[in-house]
Amino acid sequence: MIQDIGEHIYDNAYRKSEPSEDSFVLWYQEREVLVRRSGEMISFPVFGQLVQNNQRLKEQLTYLFSIDGREYFLAGDLELPPGEGYCMVSQETLRMAEPRYLAFAGITGLQLNRWYGQHRFCGCCGRELEQDAKERMLKCPSCGQMEYPKISPAVIVGVTDGDRLLLTKYVGRTYKKHALVAGFAEIGESIEDTVRREVREEVGLELGDLHYYKSQPWSFSDTLLLGFFAELKGSDEICLQEDELAVGEWFSREDIVPDDDTSSLTNEMIRMFREGKLPW
Image 1 (tube, rainbow, N blue to C red):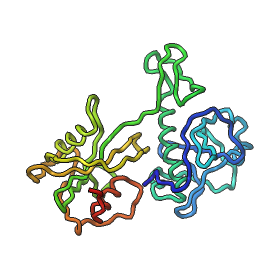
Image 2 (cartoon, one colour):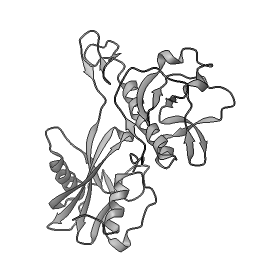
Image 3 (cartoon, rainbow, N blue to C red):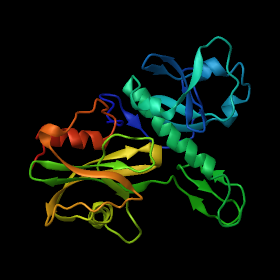
Image 4 (cartoon, one colour):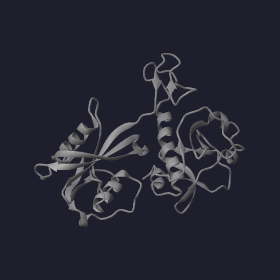
């Protein structure tokens, strides 16, 4: 999955830091990121490449995180040096890009870039927010309001009935492949209650036992995904929530078509069921 970066060590502890010559600089425009690309291989510019064309670059960089001790910074406006071969690519490119640890860095930086951009001013009094020196937090110098990065909990649910798995397709999404039932947790609701409510709302089914599988950070939507498999209880008749889903149907293991995309928790859960590798 996206966060599986092998032996590389991701350190998201916030600190005030100044870039070195080889510190990576991440630059975003909307949902695109600046990379040098060769096929599926990507790299990011480093501070030493950019500083000559951007004399005030150090002052406007924001520290993000490190991987294997090498630091990553977020940039505002940039003037690119000529002939370096960099281009803007869609965030979706990062789902399959190599090496995986750089793709993960680009995706995670995208979430932080979005948060900083959406929290420039205090929602209580309208004053411009300031970065805190000790933690990743923005604080209002006038009223003291504090803003932390947004993480929204959501569930992915593999509904099972013996050797069958419920697969769905969304309405009006660019993603057209089969998926699992999914949805965000609501205020005052446990994650287990979210699983049962989302399945009831989207496909009209009741659930028996729930089995937690694993979690995944999904920076594309500021989400922490929690994956569950859930056993059907009662009728298997599907009643679609048609403003959310275009398709909902049962698939036996042998009829599930494998997907080569290994970036998402959804695809891993479908693959694990198809291969009969669930631990219970």
